[in-house]
Amino acid sequence: MKQYIITALVTNKSGVLTRISGLFSRRGYNINSLSACATEDERYSRMTIVAEADESTIKQIVRQLDKLVDVVKIGLLEPDKAVSRELLIIKIKMQAAQRPEIESTCNIYKAKMIDLSPASIIVELTGEPNKIDAFINLVSHYGIIELVRTGLTALGRGNGSINDFDDCNDLF
Image (tube, rainbow, N blue to C red; front, side, top):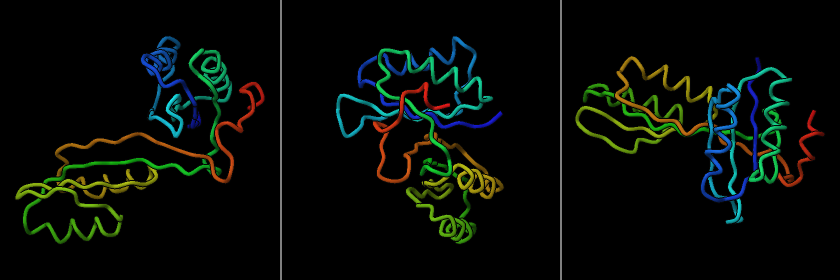
């Protein structure tokens, strides 16, 4: 099994996310992460879907997604030819004596401290998933009160855009 990054330009209207996630659900495919947002053109949204599958399954997923009326363009991003990021917001237990140590860890990871209380700190970190995972592992011994992650978002490197992708049948 390999992790794939699917990028899709879809119509920006109600129910599209439900139809796309429903396609995965009905066929028993798992979505590792999904992020969606409006694009520079208000008629469209951009979705980044991370799924783990073998090559034949990912081909099937992409072809089925491409058949959906609301999917304008779809493609696979190769990790070495894309820039990908994820956002983490994490609330960590903290005693006053631990503050310098936690601040030092945040500085090393270029994390931003966004809220501080006598018993906790909330930190924001943006980066690749392995960086996010490493930070979580490092601060877990303080005690994680709660955390939230956005899921991966990605764009292909260079001048190209999703509009330059070939038809999904040419992807494989």
